[in-house]
Image (spheres, rainbow, N blue to C red):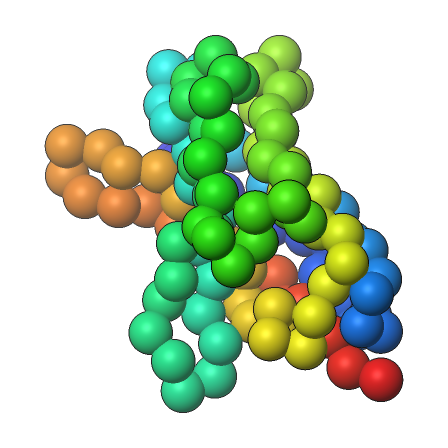
Amino acid sequence: EVQLVESGGALVQPGGSLRLSCVASGFAFSDYVMHWERQAPGKEPEWVSSISSGGSTPTYADSVKGRFTISRDNAKQVLFLQMNRLRPEDTALYYCAFTTMKGDIRGRGTQVTVSS
């Protein structure tokens, strides 16, 4: 069974940092480009960042560029998102995802709330 399980979300003050993790199982993790996406209440889902199967060439949405860093550990099948200088507008449910021939597969997400 394919599974993506996110963790690391929390309530944090503006300017703070969090590190999200996504543990993957049930598929060949190292073969896939992986993504982080987020959805704020009442808003459409938003792509945040992607990383190639080998871990090079990360890409970022303009809204997080310079503050967030995506990485992966293929040996442990874990995807990470280091989030620094968090802003209230970063508040959202964050989930990891990848695309297969049958469509996109996402985890259930982890909640990040940035508030003083």
